[in-house]
Each structure stands twice: as structure tokens, then as C-alpha cells.
Length: 469
RNA sequence: GCCGAGGUAACAUAGCGGCUAUGUGGGGGCCUGCAGAGCCUCAAACGGGAGGUCAAAUCUCCCCCUCGGCCCCA
Image (cartoon, chains in turn yellow, purple):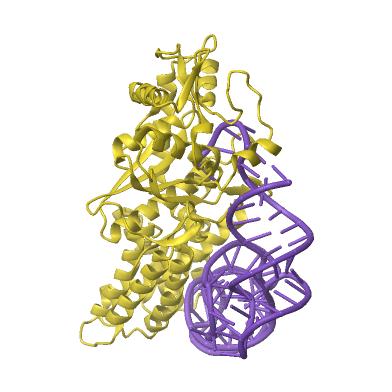
């Protein structure tokens, strides 16, 4: 099956054909390191995590790079405000990022380059642009010369003329053209700075991504991701710079952009101050539920963030988790005498899942297919006549899915605590005795009290089960 | 103004030419001492208007509405 990818560059669904046989380069814009990550960042991290895993599953050797930008305005401002060296701020929020994303089950990237650690590379790149006539120095600043580009706007489909017509563009006397963007800017008093041939100052936003992506992935690589809000100007300018620096096209073959996280009518963002940090959300919801919530919508679409949606995700995911739990329990008790065609059906289920993922990483559709599979499994589980081999295959489907999406619990049974297990067994036995004597009041009382403690008792055909919620 | 992405049953989302979808919620059954879980089943949809096709939620055109981008942002 071929992997199809919606490419922002062409605006079309294209077959994925990597540039090189041995390695697929993938670069995703990380965060600006000045504050805790919010759910919007989580959406980006999780979707590209899943995309990366699927591409790897297709047999490609993915080299995954996520950058940290610590040289832009917010970081500088925050560092000054806290009276911290920039490095301290950078280190802190990189650590927080890894903590948050780790908690969300995001597989680490191969390389996490940091902008401020690549200053010489950045300065060299800017010099190269100046040497080529693609950039110019002006009173210590350096600007990219947009007029020298032949096809401006290939990613964002914007025309230079249109941009200048309606937009609110700052008229800066230092620029030749209002659309020229900053490669290097002179420091302001009190700001952190680096020396350069032009002035003491710092790089503009965009250039660090060009430099770091090309450094680690080469002048031309396969996949570049980010949120839709980055298409213009960030990614557009990244292309201009990179292709001007290297002289190689395309800088990136496939551009992927994820829909934004909304809160009601607005997108979630720091500047609107309507964000929910990952840390706060994880206090209320299981990380697996959060992942399910994020993956239950196609990555290119926006998602509205609210508790109701998370609650629904929790219930929905619980349905799948139940099937998996039940299958696992049945697996322990199954005999291997009977045979049926669940091995084949399981293979088919994985194929269907894969097919959905091959269609521009349609995790929503892939999950829907799992619900269908789950329903079928439940029917047979209830009849209780599945063979060990079948159950292994069925559990295998869930494990395969989990390998890609990471949405299931290992086991929802005990608390990994022998003492608790034993105590629970005593309570369950007592309750069973009460039930046999038809002492429903006592039996229900035990169940209710445990429920209050967050422990659910279920009477099933295979015996009594309990789980903590 | 200029670009981009969308408008699918109560809600959230897939589907993007023929197979009426998935979950949550709702009605009715089955199972159960009850509960839970599960199964079966019912109700419920493609923003509006033209066009085109044997056939459209899916294609074309027009209109309406929403969100995003054009200062920073995953």
C-alpha cells in the first residue's frame, strides 16, 4: 500500500516517494523556549509523533529533528524580565518540554538542535546570502532581499504585490522593500547579543530553522511539519532562505501542516492568553485520553478544546480499552483446542488500520476501523469460545495499534501491588458470599463503597473483575 | 482587500462519484438479583441555489457563513 500525503506545497494529495533510499529526513518546528507548552503544542507533538511512527512502520529509516528556538522576542523579553541568562531560560523550558511530551507518550526525536547553539552556522549562512546578493546589511541589520526571488509565495500561494496592497506592513526606512525580512538585527540596550560581522545583535526569526534543518538533514529533505499558522511567513521565508543559501531545490519535498487547537471561537495561543498547559490538563485527564482526543480528528483539522470533548474521548477510549482488557483475560483462560478464522480477521483489521493511516495519516478513520473490529470481537468474547490463537491475534491488533498511537493501558486490572490485590480478593470473596446468600444490601454496599474509592467491581461471565479508575 | 482551510444527523468527527460511516448522547429490546460492561435494534445528515452524470455528501459554478494567515505563534 502506498502512503499518500497532503502536501501544502502542491496543495495536493501526493504519493510519498522519498528523495533518498536510505533515509527520510523529517523536521518539525518545536517551541520557543520561554514558557510551559500548551495543548496546541501537544497537538503538534502528538500528530507528528504518530506521523513519524507510521512512516517508520512503512519501512523507512526516519531521521527526526525537532528544533528549539530561543533567540526570538519572547525569549529575550522573558530572560530580561526574570533577569536570567538566556541559557538558563532555554535549559529550563527545554527540560519542561521533554517532561510534558514524555508524559504524553511522545517518542523522542533523534536530534533537538537549539538556535543559540548554532550561532556561527547562522552567521555563516547570512554571510553566504549577502555574498550571493540575496541579502544586504543596513545600519547593522541584515535583511533578505525579497525582490531577488523569482517565485515568491510558492508555499503560501501569496503574491508579493497582494501582500503589499492590503496588509499592515511596517514601513521601515532601513529596508529596501517592506516585505524584506530580518536575518540579523542590532541588539537593543540590555538584550542578550552575539557578535557578528555586521553588529552586536541576534538572528531574525526563520533563519535558525533553515540553518539547523539543513545542517542535520541536508540541503534537501523529505518532510517538514508545523502548524498552519506557520505557513506564512515562517515556512515561506524558510524556503526562500534555504534555497538561496544552498542553490538546491526543493528545500523540502513534502510540507505538512496541522490544524490549530481552538478554544471556543479563537485559536489557543499565548498571546490571546486562552491556553491550557499540558501540565494542567494532565492533572485532570489521562495522557492516553489526551492522545486519543487529539488523534480522533484528522491532523489537518482544527480541534476545539473543552472538557466535554475530553470526557467524551475518555468514554470512547474506554470502550476500546474494555475490549482489550476482556480479550486479555479471556486469553489467560482460553484453551487451544478450537479453531476459527480470527487470525485472518485480525490481519484484515490491521490492514484496514494501515490503509486509513496511508491516506494522509487519517488516524480518525483508523480509529473508527478499530471500533468496528472491537464490536465484532465483543460478540465472540461474550460467547466465550475463542481459541488461544485467536485471542492472541486479537490482542495483537490492539498492540499493533498501540504501537502506532499509544492509546491503551498495559492492563487495567490491579495496581501492580500484591497487597492490594490480596485485599481486593478478600473483599470480592466476601461479596460473593453475600451474593450467594442473596444478601444484596451487603453485596451492593461493598461495591458502592469501593466505587467511591475509585474501584469498580464488575460481575462478568468469566467471574468478578475489578479495576481502579 | 488578498491567500488558505472548512460547513456532514443532538453533539464530535470519517467518507470526497454508486456500498448511507465511527463515537458520545437518545428510544426500544437481550443479558443481569441489581449495577456495569456488552450485544441487537430504532430515530437522526450531508450550509443554500443552479448545473452536470445512468448515479453526487462527494464533480462544476454562484451565494451565504465560520476559522486561520498577511505583527508574534505548533
